[in-house]
Image (cartoon, rainbow, N blue to C red; front, side, top):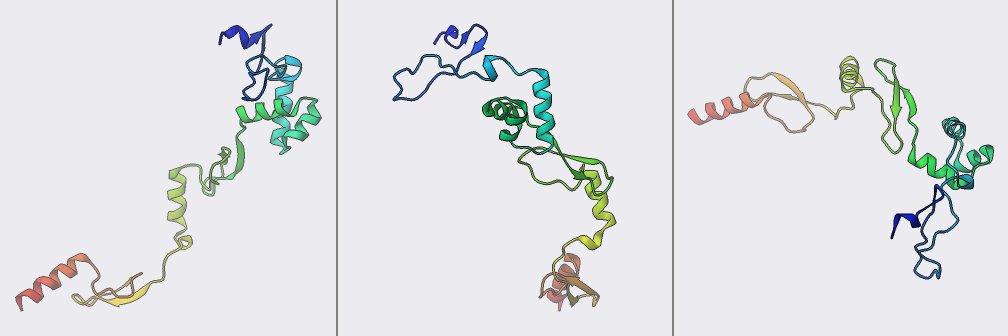
Length: 164
């Protein structure tokens, strides 16, 4: 299809794609933005401001006197970064992109330092007390049945048992 079918007088037309539409392939009168014109910088600034305040597409369209689909198209093509609280270690603001997991830390360094400073916050499994069968030292593990405190003690126990 020639490019002239999509552009006419500086406006972009959408092509109808329905298989049952007798006028398919002909340009329709649906424009990307209001009145066939691009959004102005003031419209864009107002959309961003209202979007940051948490308003939905319909409310933004009503307040800016723009078509809902124009607002929706702009918002989806230009997602805003939202501030999702502060880093738990350094208190710097966290930037969260849409459709991503909540962040607690701004970097791996902050995450590692915070966990070093707060070992009590680690959700550990239950610890069971044991006595090493080779050296007799007391140790704790998350397994109910452990006989040795280390691989070295286990290996030494097997060597000693083999000599006897």
